[in-house]
Image (cartoon, helix red, strand yellow):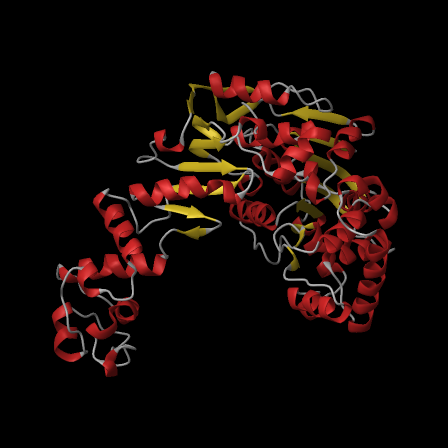
Length: 502
């Protein structure tokens, strides 16, 4: 028996799946007889953690089958990290064949392949799409700037390199698993985020559900935004012809009623091939605001998620945050290192007669430079089981200053110092995670925030994609708009000819 569970944004899809897991466990099904597979490692880990807490289980031993498909194949095939292709292996391969490869690696989160070398990208994309390499090239040659013969030769050389080195890549793992005859059997099989699976992952899923008594396939085709990485949402939609039941989760606990819900529905109904589904927003009315310039956006209060189609399009927002003294994160990196912020905060507490441990003081000493005597800068004279007042360290541990942080800390450039002083003057909680998170829309998949700023600019690649596959861009901006829990702020593009107009 196979069931599709459609989960529009914020409808509690993971909770629904874990409730089903709970039902099976209550019936006496052992956790090891349940397979729960998600597209990303983060989502799989979250599901395992929640299940462990809910059912009092050990996530490592009891929930060993709560994984990504890549991770499951890795374990099942008895692989080790030493047998996997690394970025350094790809660089070595590039040197051997005379092709520059700066970056090439598989994401440990979702198994997607990223490289600055277009030949490698095309080679992997063809494999995850289960297409002959040259057939795939011929179907895309009008938008590819690479040579057909070179592509084929590099593919053959890479196969030879991996065989000689005894190495595998993430796609190899799936291919090898599919070929294995002895597949595991599950009482219940759960596939989460199914709209993001590639054809090779679907082949693996089919090999698993062949031995499963019940299969639940959960996802939302409207949030399918990984086609560039080989995801095949059309395959997910086509499953409606071969499943026993389709259930729609129809209450969003994230999307507010009013203009945000209306705008998101206006976007998604432009998609031609989709599951038609209705869901109810929250009773609370959302707020939709529009701006012609980034300087008009006031992000001085609250939690914000700032979204764009590419990281470089976020530069103007970064500049605004630095000018205003707002604490932010971009590309997963905080605008000021947490270690420095902890040193600053602890220093100011220390000046007010707080006592600190040796680890906190050692961290401070790293930023004091000549304000600590040379023999004491590593903090080696400090004891791990002792708390110290500032006067203790001035007397016995080489500390030479008790001035405010910007008079005492050395090595900070003027821009960083002024930025931090602005942050502190604004009352930013700089000992916590940043209020403002900047991300690509792809990177924010599954995330949410009270306030979302959505930029309408398109990259060159997105403009090209929009010309032949508008559904992909519609889905992308629908996903972006539906991250907002209370307020959606839309920023006009710099060039209306290269934008998605909401």
